[in-house]
Length: 125
Image 1: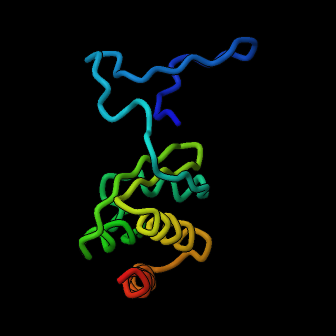
Image 2: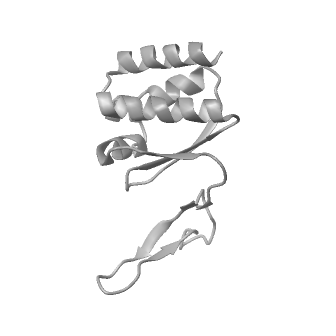
């Protein structure tokens, strides 16, 4: 799995991707994603998660709620509706992925997201 940016896409040619920022020449989070799992989410949810202030602007607090409970994880969100998660254990990785997919599929409110996180964290401990 590679987290990359589409550099060039033409109708009659294969697309070109890049794993470094063109101005700086540094990866800046792009590159190979090792371990973890990929989940499918809606394009709308992907856009909401990519917002700088997801809780206020996008109405998504589930990731912040999970992090506040002390669970450590890494994520990568693609504009194509793919969501990659990696955590210390498979169980924790699945918890984060399931929380996001359930929030997306059921269009949960901020309060419902907090309840979902509390429920999932009880199951993990």
